[in-house]
Amino acid sequence: LQREQFTRQDLDQIADDLRVEAALINSIESGSGGFKSWLSSWTPSIIHPHRSYFGLGNWDVNVITRALKQIGYDVAWHDMRNSPSTIDLDNENVLGLIINYENTNLYYGRPHWIAIRQLPAKVKSRNGKKTVKKLYWNLDSEIGQPEVIGNRDQ
Image 1 (spheres, rainbow, N blue to C red):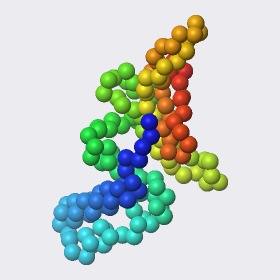
Image 2 (tube, helix red, strand yellow):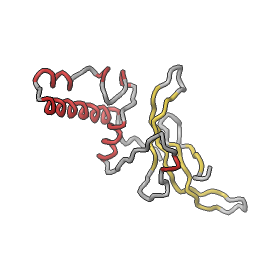
Image 3 (tube, rainbow, N blue to C red):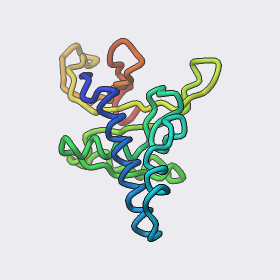
Image 4 (cartoon, rainbow, N blue to C red):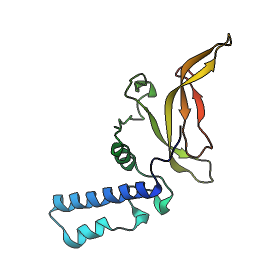
């Protein structure tokens, strides 16, 4: 269920590409160029607009979106002000969810991305027969192995 699809270097490169593209667009739109354009594309990584400070591994949603598009996936945003029930999980085109939340496992909170995916699994019913149900799995990279969250009704 879990595999490393992108390395830290891959995502850093995407973040750097996005920063340079934004600098070029800003330069063209403002009619400026030269030093200002160069400076905005080479700002230190500590103030990078598309990844966390000090390279702690939290990339912005634009990096995640670009990475997924590179391997053929589309991303649809969900506004957290709306109920999660508005997400059409029965849509055959929905492969999974990617959620960014504040991880408070450490003494300070930091944003962290997790993936949740629905996959078929054989489960025993009350009468002892095995049936196939679609279960949701937590594919968080910070846990040792995938964890079953439950089915849609849970």
